[in-house]
Length: 309
Image 1 (cartoon, rainbow, N blue to C red):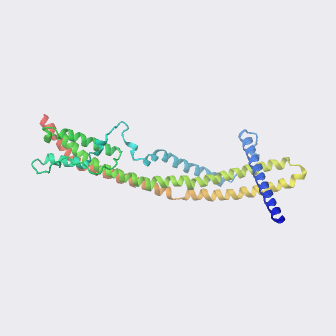
Image 2 (cartoon, rainbow, N blue to C red; image 1 turned 180 degrees about the vertical axis):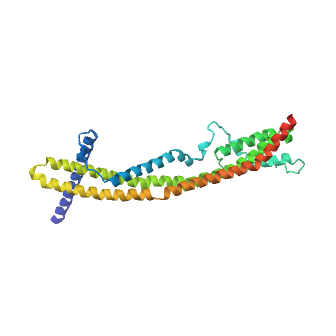
Image 3 (tube, rainbow, N blue to C red; image 1 turned 30 degrees about the horizontal axis):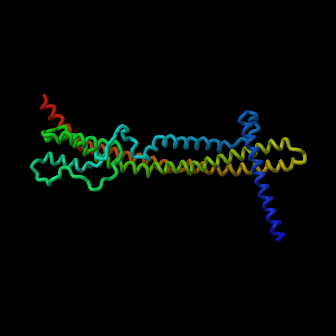
């Protein structure tokens, strides 16, 4: 029992000593950092880090800032409503009018005489999905509403603008679907891994650099203590400097390795390529959708101008 108490006391004393030593080092480092910031330490008293380390620091800083610069804008892809008109106030009734019903109404108007069951021209969905809030979806709903307003009048079957708006609705509906696929591809292929690189790989390298800075401050603080140490403490102070030098060398080597790993990582390039691929696919689909209706809308425009003149 006595032995157990002695062991507990020894461990407690050891832990207390380690905590005190850690606190003393932290205090000395803080004092050293303050003195350097105030210009109270000459440049030759500050331990010079390897040029390779400093070059890698600059490159990692540039990489980190490049990630932040892109994220500042591309974080909008986290929400699909990034381009949705803020002034739009759409009711649930407007949302529930699906584009499919608009197409059927358009077909019924342009196929007069074709037998249609009662209510076939304006069916209502049984399950209304949560509406998407994107600019293409807003354009789809707006052009659909505008088309129906023109086509539903007594002479609506002859409204060229109504027909053109129905065609525009059709194109934007296709674009809307492509837009949803685009946003999903961007988030999964670019945004999430891009953020992950910043929050993990680059952040680990930044923490390793902070460890180097702390170790360097501890070394320079130890050197200052050695200069002012009493003869009785000279040997202990010299050992502290040597230990601090070894610690700095070790932490610097670790930081160099981590920074090189971050800079050589091909993921950011792969992520950017995924962003470009998603955008290319989306814009190509949008161009195809608009091209498929533009000729017909132009014909309606030319015919209307001819009749007017």
